[in-house]
Picture 1 (cartoon, rainbow, N blue to C red):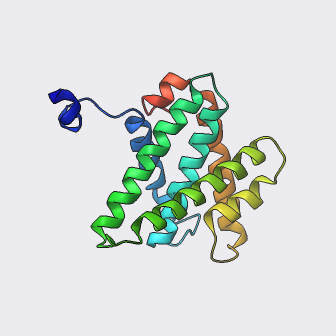
Picture 2: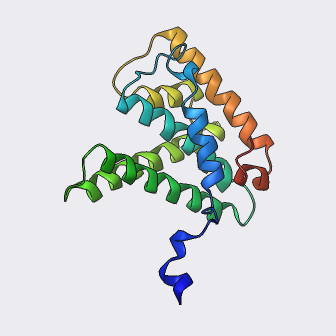
Length: 170
């Protein structure tokens, strides 16, 4: 009974947490903001985090039967993080749930776009542009860098086993 009531107080990590931590570490790499020229703002950082997370979700959903469950765990960690970040920013008001749903919808759109790009149904560079530079057209060299960086990340994600991904190793 106490385990049910106080389940969040255990030292056991939540499923998908290691992968989410690695996704965050990837999204914090300076090359996205320096060479890729993604604006170093809340919106720009969200764009990079959502892009990296979307690539990981797309990869998990291409995997084994447990892939959708693993992608759901990663998405849950993303939602928890977005909720916590918004609360830290002082945006804990009645509209918070609506904002979080909008951010999750943005992640879902990116997942769909990256799945299509991985299947060669969409152009990779155009997908990178739409995913990372929502507020305008990037400089050609910045877009080239970001397209190459997302392609390299996709190769690392697809080369990793599902177990490795869940451990945050890619």
